[in-house]
Length: 179
Length: 239
Picture 1 (cartoon, rainbow over the protein chains, first blue to last red):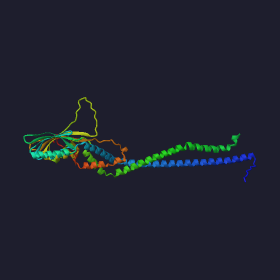
Picture 2 (tube, each protein chain N blue to C red; picture 1 turned 60 degrees about the vertical axis):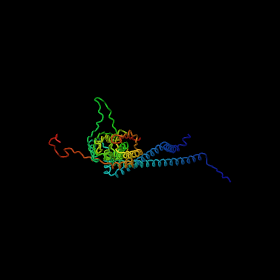
Picture 3 (tube, helix red, strand yellow; picture 1 turned 135 degrees about the vertical axis):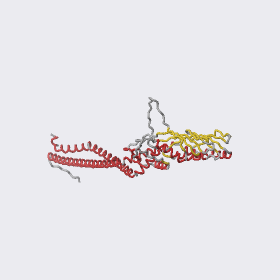
Picture 4 (cartoon, rainbow over the protein chains, first blue to last red; picture 1 turned 90 degrees about the vertical axis):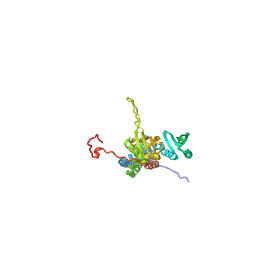
């Protein structure tokens, strides 16, 4: 059975009652809102305070570390200077052809029965003039030339002349540095 | 008349509206500011971490080792045009290979004419050319070249002229065009922007340093002033 809702109060009383109910609800909403606002504000403020404190603490820590690092700055300077100088020295060594070592190798590969009269090194070209006295020495020399040709850094470009001279065979070797 | 009936609602509604408005307009700004502050803290934290690591790294470096390494690097590439040091290097090279120095000439470089204005361009690596004439045994030539190329300060052989002084080939006259290098101290780096990885020698750099240490060093004998020596010369013109 359906329940019947019968309000027998007079209209004015009903209106007042509804007003009282509305006022109570509004009050509750206002208090809730105020409470929420206060909680949010308190949370924000405390968070702000905490973050600020943390920031100040870290700034202090950073400053202390910077001061300590400043004390060690001569070492940093020394280390950076070292790295810079190493870089430049490496550049020098990289660009520097190991000419001496190579020439030493070439010189030592000449046969005993020979004389190097002249060596000229200019830029990438090396010219060696000499004399070979005996025929077996010439053969040995030719063999060595083939060996030299195999090497990568320098290669034998040409033999200008291999002419029979007064005391043996004069030769001119021209070596050019390969790029 | 009708509003008067709802006067009880004015204060709560105002409170609600104010709270709502402040939540809508003030809170986001505050939250943004908090987030910004948080970001700043993170960045400071990162800085602190990096500075701490730098501090640990630098303080762990052995000062003596570092000074030795720096001195080796300076020996390879001096900071200034130290003719005395170069001369000593050349002398050591010759003595090592059993050669005698006949003459040594430093190239003075280009001299500008009077009134000529030339721009001074500072290079990272400055060259100091020298011409050296030596005489020595032919058999020791390779040792001589090796000595030149394995010596600190670094030398570069730019040109060689070799003439046998005797037909027997016992001794040779060598005319060498050498270059030695120097580099003024640089301030290309800033202490503030030195990164953590800048404070560690890379593997390549360590290898290079090891390679340099295999080179023969020229000893630098400090030239003391007269006052330091505590001697008084009777006549300044007599040596």
